[in-house]
Image (cartoon, rainbow, N blue to C red; front, side, top):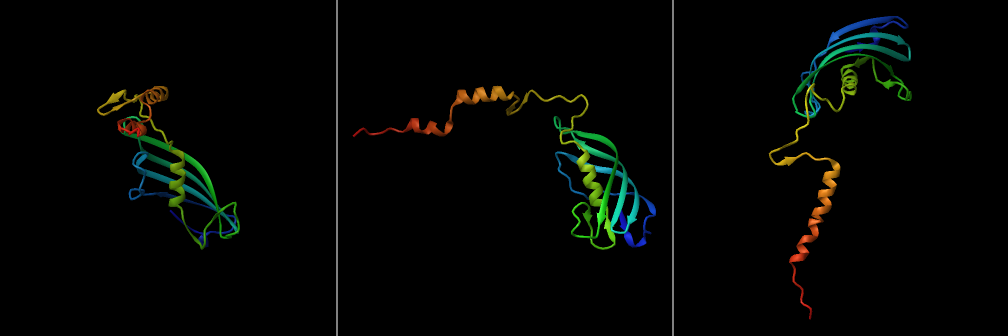
Length: 164
């Protein structure tokens, strides 16, 4: 979605609607697999030195279950607003040089901020153990670690010293 400030009139709102394609975006494969649908409605108002963009985002996101690594379909409806300026000294608003503002990166950032880091598929349970691994509590791990000792010093037991 692109917004051209040169086409806006001061103080008058204009609405844009667009479906954004995030199929070429790269995601963390352990968090989000894809965003197959993202519909955005933006109400844009130019106030000379500030451009206010009110967003309504509808998106389908394919997340990854933290327990099973299976796909988890998620649906979001998000309302947010972003303000832009062309003044580089203004720290309260996003700085965008020129009249053309590319909104896709901001919309993607809003979506990523709304998807939780830990996604658990309905009914998914943590595995108890498997081939080559065990699941244990932190207390069990600490107790086993104390019982084992420090393997870095075990090699010293095999040395023989002359007492001369």
